[in-house]
Length: 163
Image 1 (cartoon, rainbow, N blue to C red):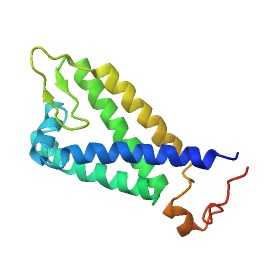
Image 2: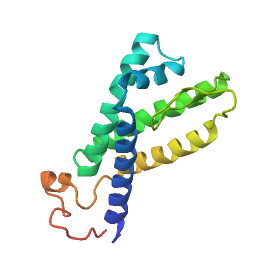
Image 3: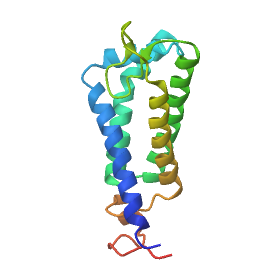
């Protein structure tokens, strides 16, 4: 279908922007990112802080790969796995009655007494991003992607996709 490559391009760059924003907001304070992951009370302290410190780098790498259209299917698949983990984590804290900020775009940790958790909105948002990641895993071909030149697809020369 004509135009589907542009739709995929918008989906790819949109998910890239999400990852780049999420990683950029956390990279300045890796210890805080580790404390945020620890607030979920799922992983042991050492594992939570290590994962939290690595997370901004993973998010930035996924964002760059998606933005460039390099390894799009793999980056989208890893995105989907990571988003499933986020969804499980948010559902976990909600089910256990913990009161935390997800820390998805910086911040995070225990909420003040006058703050309310936004678990439903967080789940809906991450569920939407998961749908995009799933779509990109199934249909990674898009415009303006390095993958096109590496794989010599019909889109490499900017030709329209016709099915």
